[in-house]
Length: 151
Image (cartoon, rainbow, N blue to C red; front, top):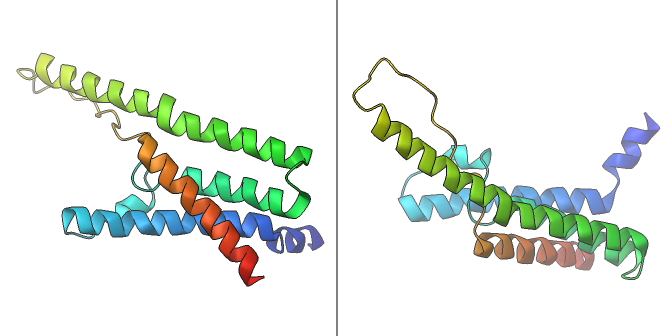
């Protein structure tokens, strides 16, 4: 049970999770402004503005840097991890979403006259645009520095 207490008291982890939740909350606000309706589904889906993945990993890397030092191996590890996650969010997953959109369109066109063919549509919004990733990163660093100032 003492281990759970240590996890709960891990400031770097808590700040990173706060950054992720704030980003998810901002997605709800952006969606409300953009479409003029409340869509709570954005709280649990991937994609959207800002990137919660980017906010999480940049707040984590920044917290590690602030806590253990900018020259520490742990900061290097967290930074490389953040770069991989953000590259995946904006690159690989974005490309997979574009492919899903094309495949859905092909299925719609090919099987338009066969109503008995039923297949679930592929999820099209998988990744982030570079702007969404950058916004999430800036948010993560800002929350990490704000938390540092408060503590």
